[in-house]
Structures are given as C-alpha cells and as structure tokens.
Image (cartoon, rainbow, N blue to C red; front, side):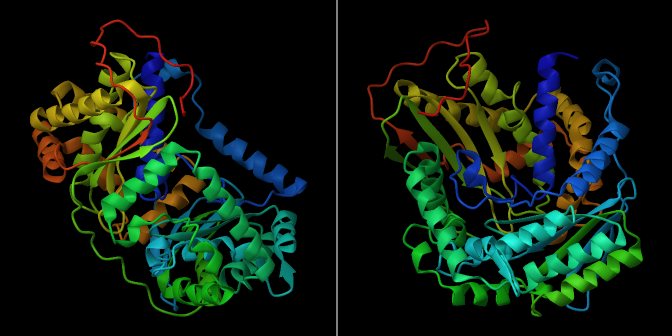
Length: 516
C-alpha cells in the first residue's frame, strides 16, 4: 500500500469518525477556516501523578491490544472493529441514557449533551457559550481552583464545550468505587449547581473580547462569520457560538442562571456512558446525575432555515492569499440521503488526496495547499461548505474552476472506480470511529442527541456499501446546485491573472499552509 494511500485512509478515518460522532461534522463548521483564542471547547483538568500513571498505563494497554505488527500486513483488508452492545433507557427525570459496557480499562467516560447551544441564545449571542464556560468556575464552597484540584486529586478529567446545536460536559474517571463516587459527586455539583461567580464571568468575558480583536487579523475567520450570516440570515445558526463584541459585555449572572435552569434540565439531557461499569452501576450513575440537574422538559429544535439568496460577498483584507468559501444549505442529521451524500462528498472533496477538487486544484495546477468540502448535518439543515485559499491574483479563476468542477460532478456523477475505491476506504477507516472509549462515548452522545437508531453505525456502513453511482449522483443533485452557492472571499483586490494550464507532472507544493 502506498504512503499516499495510507495517508488518505488516515485522513478519511478522522473525517469519518467526526462525521459519525459528536464533533466537527455536526457542529461548528464555521471553525473549519480558523479559530480564535476564546475559552476552549474542552477544558480538561490535569490528573494527579498517581491517577495520571494509572490512566496512562490503561491507555497504553488499550492501544497495544489493537496495534498492528506491520502496516504491510494490513493491505486493503478492513481493520477489525469493536462490536458495540448499546443499552438505552430513560431516567426518572427524563434524561435519555446510552451505555456500553467495556471492562478492558479500569475507567469510565461520561458525557452529558444538552440541547443548549447557541441556537437557543434567544437574541443574546454568546449566552449559551458563557453559561457552559462558567460551569466549573464555582460551586458551593469551592472556587475554580478548588474544583480543578478536586478532579486532579482523583485522577479525573472534566471537559465542557458549547456549539450551535448543543452544550456538553464530560467526565473521565477511574472506575474504582471510591474514586468514582467522589468524582461523580463533584461533577454533579459542577453541572447541576454552578454558582456563576461574578469575578470569573468578567475574566472570561475579557478573554472572549480579546479573541474578537484577534480575529480581526484572521481573514479565514472573518470569511467564516460572514458566510454563516449570508447563508442563514435571521436564523439562530447565523451568529457564531462565541457571541459578538456588542453582546458579550452586557450578559449578566442572572441571565446565565436563567439559561442554566432552562437548558441544563434532566429532560433536555442525553447521558452517554462507556467503560468499566455494570448495568446496575451505570443506572445508578445516570440516576445520580439526572437528579442533580434542574428538573424540566426538553427544549424544541430551532426552526428550519429559509433558502438563502445566491451571491458573492468580498471582504477586503491586506494579504497575499485570498480565502474562498462557498456554501449551500445541506441536510439535517438523520436524513435518509446522508450516506449517499457522505460518499459522494468523499469523492468530490472530503477525502483528502485523490479527490476531484484536490487533484484538479492542487495536484494539477498548484493553486492551493488544500481544498476541502463537506456536509455538516445539524438539528435542522446544516451547511455544505467548500473551503480553500489561493494566491490573490488567481482568486477569480480558482473560484470559477471550483464551481465548474462541482457542476461537472453533479452532471456526470462519480465513476465506478471512484465509487468502489471510496467504499473500500470508508470500510477500512470505519473502525477508527470506535477505536477508544472516548470515541464511543462521543458516538453515543451524538446518537442520543439526534435521536438516531441504536444500530446507526452499522446501518450507515451497510447503506454506504449498497450505494450505486446513480444513487450518489441523484442524492448530490437533489441537495446541491452549481448555481446556488453563497460565496464569501477575503483578501486584497488585485489585478487577476489567468490560471496555469493543468499538468500531469507533480507540481512543487507549498511547504506549509499559507495564511496571509
């Protein structure tokens, strides 16, 4: 197997894992271009030396148990994958629970997913983000330092993050009863009864506001923000989860408390559990966490967005590169066409090297370091996006080339060879989506949050393998049009030059990703 094929399979595996699971393909597609230094999407306490050593040994044991002796032995055979026996039930408070028993490691992973993302900001951009960021800043009798030391002393990790659809809080702990009970007690306080101290709120606001200043120097981020505004108009998805420079200063502790009481209820939560637990222990954990949360119903999903008006917006920015971002409305999570769209996009531009866009734009013409496309299904129609950057004087020609390639793909569809190759690569990369307990807990959170069947992972793979060229072509044409793109460019206005002709010889590529 060639190095390029191995690299492509690795990239595909990462994309598949995130598209099937909780992360990039369902949330924060706007951050594909760039990010700013605001409170991180996952704040993790550092384990103590003893807990860290145990956790490290356990992780190494898990990795060793699945390690291949040689890549040459793999060939084109698919990797062995973990069979998941997903158990599900509902707590008295209304939380949906998904559990996978896994005794290979003396640990467990817990993830709470709430329908409490920025789509529920209700006219106060950044409210959901600040509420989530403040969870571990204070509880009764403990400040942020004491909370961090509490998790650290138990060898436990706490994480949290807020996105457009959802907010999450997670715990990784040793499964030994004494450590587990103490970690769960602290976690339940942090998620269920945060105190939202005023001094911490001001500190985090300052960090966010500093991030807004930083993003003014990032053309990719500016283009991303503008793209979502143009694509979603007055829909809640239009504004960034981070909020705006105008909205953040005025958000009060009282507003955070009210949002927590509404969004962090047991009825609005999905509890995902994976690890060294019995069903009885998992039920007790779920009941404890559910009871610690405010009691209340689930929040409704956001409304469906209106179809945007196609067109191009330009952001003037002094740089050598121009960012090109193209988008259309895609599909909601759970749409029956997702498998066909996913496979089609892997051929068009989502699978790294060897895709239509990468081959024509980078390999044959050397116009960019990388070009990527992808569907990001969400609670309602998420975006389909294409993202790249190129030399400013070639921006117009490159944009026209991208649109022409999309049009050709929609008109003719993939070839049989492309389809079969992508099917093999998806099958080969699929095990990466459940390679570790943390991967699995992310999958469970996603399955529960988007109300997908418990057999979703296996169903997806079967659907992919059954697709024909005509199935993929029909699905892509049903949801995309070469004339319906919302386009945002960010860069300097300079005299344009014609594109170089395509070459069959490898062109010299940039050694790193160009930004400005």
